[in-house]
Length: 171
Image (cartoon, rainbow, N blue to C red):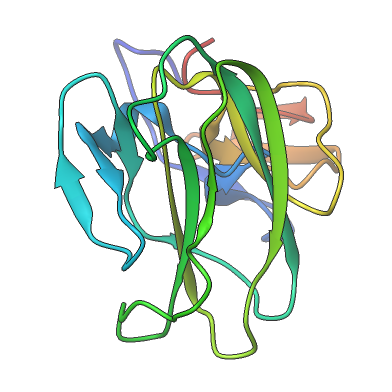
């Protein structure tokens, strides 16, 4: 397949997937100009970025890290958790850090958490990842992937190729 003649790609063993992959769960291109308050509500303000609802696992540590040059009043970087109906789960969400420069903090999702939202200032090299340690920044990726395994694929004309990574959006 080429951009001029797109074709359906069919996997010979069914493990090619489409969706978010990689360790970074934060998609800066899918944010609104807002920050999260202590009740998990998005408050509109320019210069800040607030994520959409990101599906997560309960009772799991998540680390939020990045770099900012602004932190307005008491509203710096924040993590908030929500249940399956996207209702804020108190008292968590008080995980706010008013930090200028490099920052990183970890919160553990409650046992009834299904979603997380995060907000930060400029969100430079911002990463939300599973685990209790901030690791080197990796961009958010969404696209076709093979879960790290090498796959033989074929298109609808039976052309075959071997690939480990088919597409990284933004590359």
